[in-house]
Amino acid sequence: MTSSQLPVVGHWAGNKPYAGTSDRTLPVTDPATGEVTREVALASVEDARAVVSAAKAAFPAWRDTSLAKRTQIVFRFRELLNERKQELAAIITSEHGKVLDDAAGEVARGLEVVEFACGMPHLLKGFNTENASTGVDVESINQPLGPVAIISPFNFPAMVPMWFFPVAIAAGNTVVLKPSEKDPSASIWLAELWAEAGLPEGVFNVLQGDKTAVDELLENPAIKAVSFVGSTPIAKYVYATGTANGKRVQALGGAKNHAVILPDADLDLAADAMVNAGFGSAGERCMAVSVAVAVGSVADTLVEKIAERARGLRTGDGTRGCDMGPLVTGAHRDRVAAYVDQAEKDGAGVVVDGRGVQVDGAAGGFWLGPTLLDHVSTSMSCYTDEIFGPVLSVVRVETYQEALELINANPYGNGTAIFTNDGGAARRFRNEVEVGMVGINVPIPVPVAYYSFGGWKNSLFGDTHAHGVEGVHFYTRTKAVTTRWLDPSHGGINLGFPRNA
Ligand code: NAD
View 1: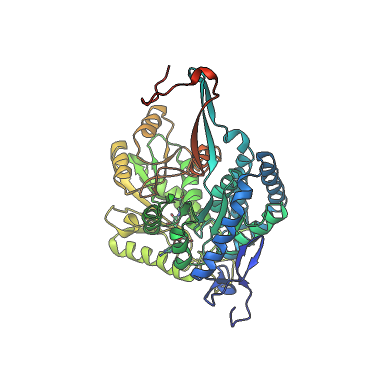
View 2 (view 1 turned 120 degrees about the horizontal axis):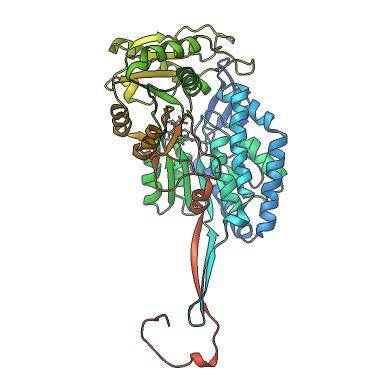
């Protein structure tokens, strides 16, 4: 459906590729070379409806498929994914740009959720009460919702969808995944794997596209719930529109994650952590540390140690064993570089400058090296905005209290960390900080699969986090059943409200 000769990444419905009817496409680039390698289909409303219909048609049989059979398929998917995870990692690197090892890490964290979902028979158990009233039993059962939509961002094309779909599918729902247009191929690879694992047709579907596709998912009455991950303005929009259309919505948004370094911290370990969490995946992680809050006397030494490490990083092609890859698109690289230009004009110190970095990669790649900004103030745009690139800002404060107030005043509340050897200070921070995920000497505190992932404030709209028991809760609804097996003693007319006896 395109005039160019490039392959087109299309949709997936009914366990097979679906080309759709729209002739709209977007180019997909390899960020390490800047070359357009393929195109991605952009669904029309009709295409979106066709994919949703496949999910709707599959739901009745899937919800009634025994838990034993459903779990066996999820288990088989786990086995195939584990065998072939390097293939998926290579696809991620070719479209996102993150280095191969990091892409493999993303797949491993997604795999964890698949393993969690293998325990669905236990997780779906309800509860019951015998003899709640005389001869009356009450039980609570958990049932799937129906077709559900997952709308995901570019920065984790495999892991973020896997936060949701293993749990949704194992619980008996059918899924329409709308991946990011920037790196769409991982989703089709995952769909093929589900088919190979024996998932019936229509249970897992992929809809490629932009706002047109998203809006149809938010409005189509067949879709019962929406899990969204992306930037805060779109998360807000998805939450407002989805809930206005009567859907259950969890919408995870952007972040500005602060790490506090107290005077008693081990500064070598803290500097290692700042570099790993600030520049890993070129800072394109929602749990990246973008602000290091240096408390008291540590700032000069800390900045020196971070700078030394940042200068030693190798930026380049993700397939060549480099530490850090390119940014996802040329436009995004330019946007991030513009924040560095502005920070310099605003008076921040550019201690390590990633503009004009020497790279191990093609000249056309979307490069920006690790950048360290010092003496950043809270009015500068490099502090107020989510930059989503390899830019770490150091803000200097005098006290723990100032550091805490800075974080709590921030509109985002995704992740944070504190570096200290003082158990009392760490315990106080854990209690007082207004952020959804907290690390104590752990820079990227992404919870394990059997806990739940989610931020506070502008980092999450809705009240349910991803995966873990909250994920099971999100994808099920509870039915309370009250039972009495009649015997002749129950006869007689009584129009009063039923009372327990
Ligand atoms: P994005 O908001 O641009 O896109 C996310 C999804 O929304 C994509 O599928 C995209 O196609 C769709 N979309 C974009 N514009 C839309 C519109 N106007 N109407 C409807 N749908 C639209 O985000 P991104 O750039 O792909 O991802 C980066 C962002 O995601 C960052 O802000 C990052 O912090 C956030 N993120 C958050 C988490 C978290 O757990 N909180 C995790 C990963 C990424």
